[in-house]
Length: 206
Image 1 (cartoon, rainbow, N blue to C red):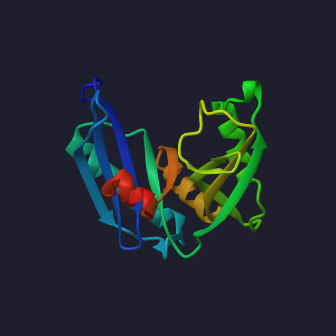
Image 2 (cartoon, rainbow, N blue to C red):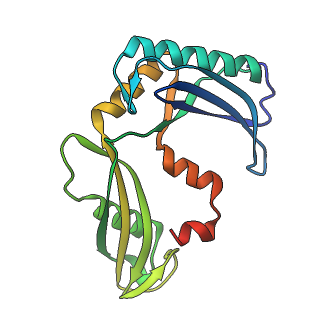
């Protein structure tokens, strides 16, 4: 990698029906991201967010990433990949656990209640992409956003689950890996957009 290693590089990949876009961002010590390279290429092999031709999709990804590398003067090793399409689904769920040690909510309690909320029946061909906590409830006290450290006996969580067709996810991952890249994560494109443009207050309001 030609660029200085003082700052971390993060790479996003949008594999759309009309074009593939790779964007390289440099993350400074304060967590701010500066775009240092963008590459795009006509997309071939995708239809409505689903891979219909692996070889064509791989070629389009390679061209977009190579262009971004050239502009950013770096070598890309891994990417965050956006996903969208009619196969995406979502649902609300609820989990409940007893608060363990000293009746004070720990990180472990939060993990357990999220796991409990995740343990809901979804179609076998779908996989969970994101678990988005809406609120926590301690002993019927609602509207809690950060429960760790609070006292109580029972912890509930209301969450929103986002799912995607497992085959669609696997085929996207396969295309990226055939380009010699690792997949850092698969992210719902609409969710990524909300994080980019909405304030915390706006997110809370839905």
